[in-house]
Amino acid sequence: MMRRLRWIILPAALLLLAQPICAQQGRSAYERMEPARLADALTRMKMSQLLASLVSQAGDSVDGKLLLAKDKVSRALRTTDQVARDRLIDEALAIYAELIKASENATKDEDVLRHYRLRLDRIVLAALTKSKPYIERVQYFLARSGDKAAIVRFTGPQIRELNKLLRDMKRIGRDWHGDVKKMVTGVLWKMEELTDEARYRGAWIRFYNARALDPVKFKDKRRMLLSEAAEDVAKYVDAEDNDSGVKYSSLLLAGMAKLELDDWKNCRALLKSAAAKENPSAGERLKAMFEFARSFIAQEDFAGADREIATFRKQGAAVGGMSPAIVDLQATLLQFRRLFAEAESVAKSNQGSLKVPKALVLERDIIEKLAIPLNGVTLQVRHCSQYELKLRSSTSL
Image (cartoon, rainbow, N blue to C red; front, side, top):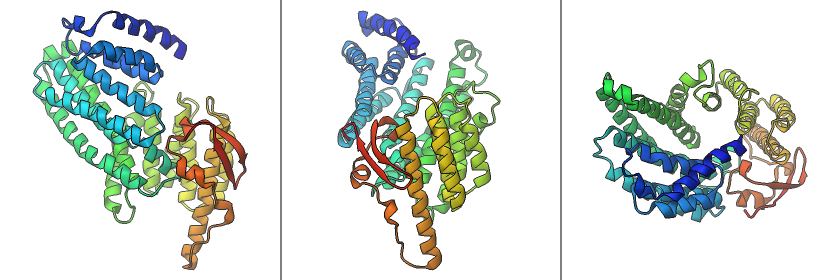
């Protein structure tokens, strides 16, 4: 499938390079979004040199600035230097802010759509893309001091921006409702689709913000955010098919939200559905399996946790496209957390100090240096048993 996409995308990119963007002035603003969509495809396919060529061709036009922002994001996603990554993302955010400001008084339908697309993309970039390394470390029990605070700092303001965006979209939807011309041109449906996307992406922002909040100090706020996140993806969870393309990721999100709410029965039903073979995403399936096992640790059902961690090792290895080393690493991290949780539980019940078994000691360099998503790292396993983790990365962390 990827090879087929390359044969489609590559000629399109070369054709675009053959004619400067300024030659497209006769096209509508919405049609001129084509280079941006092409840039997204090139980023996903890791064709960075071709993307750089697009940027150089685009110049200082609106498309050129948007391509420049996307190129910076592409470079940020490729680096393992956290400082450089954040700097590139901040530079991209500044470009988005400039484009949003310039289009805030747009009157043409296509330009209005672009304005709202820019606002949503900036929110996602500021909240999710920038937070991803911190989110990954929290998920895999490798959080550093300040990681949760960073997630709250990145996602909190964007929840406010998201709410404002949704209110503005709702107003536009009311204004455009029943307009035959807008129905014929399709802009009405495009706005509705964009609004649905904003709710879906916003659900993830609300979830990660809630997961990073102190569960005692912010108990009510967490419950509200988690409930809103589950509600915003409910239409996809309840859908009979995956025509939306986000049914299984919505099942995963809803399941994780229920887990954070200690709703064990519903969380496991949702996560089990998210891990189904029908889910085309191997990464999502493995993540659902991981969270399913984690739910038993969170419930302090340690016998159940041992059973599900063993199941995770076996079934995770059978998920196509996933490295056995990654599955083994994640299973070991689950085991690490399970043993630590039991030690915490014993200490709590005995009202004594927490004594961590020697089996829980992980190599410090992995904990300190792991700064990029586990699924994006090629790890060479030196020794990995149920209770010990001895790993060396084959990439520069």
